[in-house]
Length: 232
Ligand code: C5P
Image (cartoon, rainbow, N blue to C red; front, side):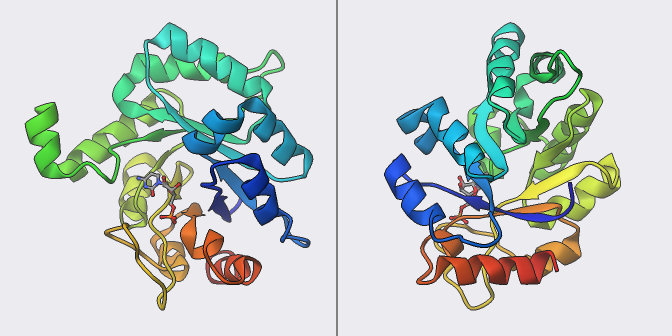
């Protein structure tokens, strides 16, 4: 898969999601379904969006004992999603079990990527709450390497970290990066942001863009602008 723009469909219902997706008559965007929408609508929302011809990143960030994650991944694999994810902090063994569960009988499987440290976790909370005393960027790179050792395809990270992840884990290791804003747009609650064009220069493979597209007056035009800046 080449570079692409993934639209974060952070909507509370199928109705709102389809109202949004119906606007796209040309190119069908790669869609991210997160916990809010999946927990509201269940597997049917995945099947329906897939049937409409969209690729899907199912962002459920699994984290449990290896056996439970393996079985849950095998269910997600049968939903025919294109990318799914888990927390790297669940250990290498959990990530290996996840890959096993995800792999279908014919050997095919969705891509599997890991969340390293959430961008909402800063150095202070990592040290005080989690008793992790290493610098945060060292932790992120260590978790990325663990994901690679376990056989995963890449990580979710900030576009600011994409270049370093590629230099540590190899250029084929995917970087999927949220925190993207247009140069003239609202930052909202994201702290460290980059434009689609900057994320491209940093070497990000997929950008995940939510509100700059979903809350735009003309979402299709905003999506096309992202594609122009990042892909073309
Ligand atoms: O609206 P916005 O462009 O900020 O949406 C970004 C999407 O990426 C949201 O679905 C958010 O949950 C997700 N995300 C993030 N930062 C992370 C991981 C996921 O913003 N570290």
